[in-house]
Length: 300
Length: 277
Image (tube, rainbow over all chains, first blue to last red; front, side, top):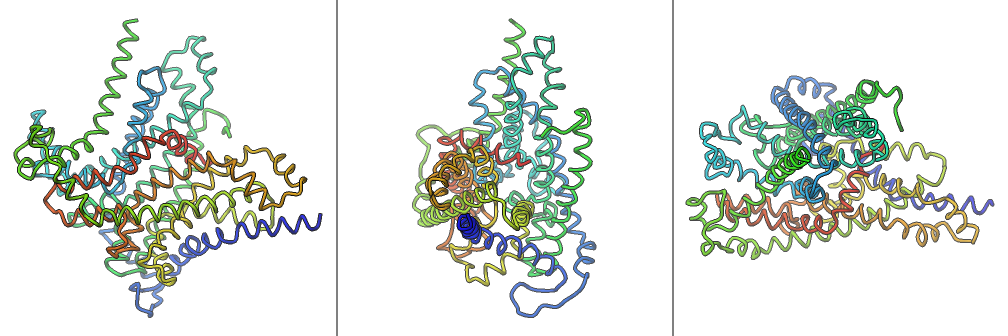
């Protein structure tokens, strides 16, 4: 028995040593290092660094462009939040008796698997001011007066970019909702129908409570995703004009790799992590209570 | 009866609108890719030119670009290496965590959970220095090591799967004198094949489509991936939308093909990867 135990230890040790080294070296250490770097001034390559205390934190809070960027993140959040209702409705639709449901399911998820950079360029073309397809569609609908410089008007550029984000990610949420709806046992729905429940009753009293865990996940995913929007504005507008379509992550990355201010960028990275953790805690304590209140207890 | 027909009609209508919204940007890009420079200006972006004026010249230009093949080759190599190590480390880590109790297990699980919570893009600010220190900057090793070390969704998929394999199987093998390594390699690992298929397909799509890691760590021309190839190509084609459009379509093709063949795994995998509680 002693030898079996020893063999077991050897097995566990050899199995975990490389994955743990990789995790510590490339994930845990960088995360801790970000915290250390947030208190120094460093250009990213020279050997000399200077401890500056909390001055990076002070300049972060005073940075107007960063606040503007964070405000732009909120556009993505609200637009996606608004879309959740449609995504939910669409998932219910696909879950109902409908011809071609399989094909529609395939189509709705298609944008999610396509190369994001290719999509960003395709939409740059779609919204382009010269011979752009979107303007042609408006002309076709006799709505010429609606035509704008979609990607260079600071007032609307974030909504335009958010629409690309919606195009790309909504299908993911629909598929998640659909998977949750399909996991509700069919006999419960049948029994309710026998008892005279109509479509709305089914939705309100069986389907919605049945997929609350997924709604919960999608809400968190939405907040986390909105805080980390990066590649769509990076490719389509580079955050411009000015900082009109910059986002928190985009600004952070620029601060490090374009402005060579790794200390300040680390401070911003810590701020993002802090926000995500705070939101996670709020979600687990407050939103859960609201979402699950009419169930009495949380299902596992 | 009429009510049901009407209901079905409305449902179909909504779905067809969805399909059009999904396909519009792709199809319109394809239209542009089939036009000459002159027709780009003179024809509507919403439709093709006359059949005899359709041109494949733009695709020819893209397919003659040697960097496209370099991109394919690099993406392919990064993909294969990352998948091998992801599957190897993912299966064994999930197996050990799921089946054994050992000192420090809580710390191990906690670290992996932390790894999931840390935001991806901004971590590169600190990771950059480590990659540079190891001499991996501007080598193909950089993305491989990052793809293997970070993004740990495979652990959840494997853990779920392993928890459904009866422990009695392990016990029987051990009583028969099977070593732990043999038990894992010859009995458990093959049983995980369906989960491995899901992990490989989903990871493939994430890795093929990733822009940021190769952009940041491999600026060298000979290390372009499919995605950074497209970014370089786009910068060179300022104003020639028809040529860029052909590039966009070509870069879209690999994951669309994967999706067509493996959508069952993809659709079930994303749902399994999401609900971690």
